[in-house]
Image 1 (cartoon, protein in one colour):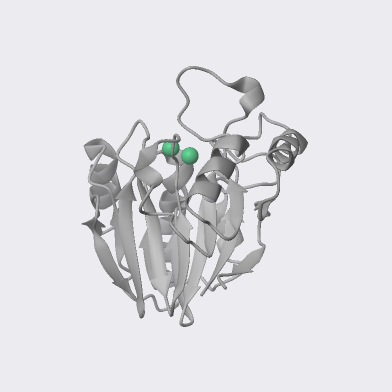
Image 2: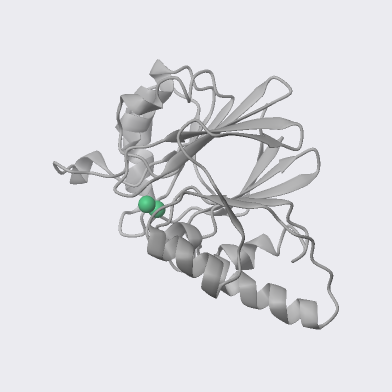
Length: 245
Ligand SMILES: [Zn+2]
Ligand SMILES: [Zn+2]
């Protein structure tokens, strides 16, 4: 099992970057997790347009799904030129209803719904969705395959909901969209310190800090992460592939 970062900007893509998107490869099957602005472009560096086997959307904030619309143009234009597309299962939360309605009726996606605790067989792996603390219905994903565990927190404010889901993960991509230096009373994303505490408490073996907000300097995120102490982390790098091992 391996995961490729297709986009790691939080909220909106920074210059030359893409918002949230990850390509999970299991048994040579290609699973796109989230499809924010710019992700469709980077996706094509790694798989052909008709090479996806499943799509999972963790929540319906535009920085996690907006490229599904542009992907539709790509599919339709290439289908007209003879490219053969299989039916790709796509899963997303049921709300906000207006977004789901638009994706299905206007953009032609047949969507299966996920909820807290949904388990999905995924090409020999087992995926389980867990609710996160975020202003819209949002799910993290825990994937277990051949004794290895990959977790993606999606967007998530720190809280106890993560216990029981990140535990003993071999690789965990965490929402690190905030900084301690900019701490406010109501934050919807985690700081490097919060990611560190969570990773330590739940025995995460390697952490990728992602959902990096372009407003913040990457170096500031790095400095706060390094100041936490000894831990196995790195800041997400677009188009880099990580083996879950
Ligand atoms: Zn986001
Ligand atoms: Zn969000």
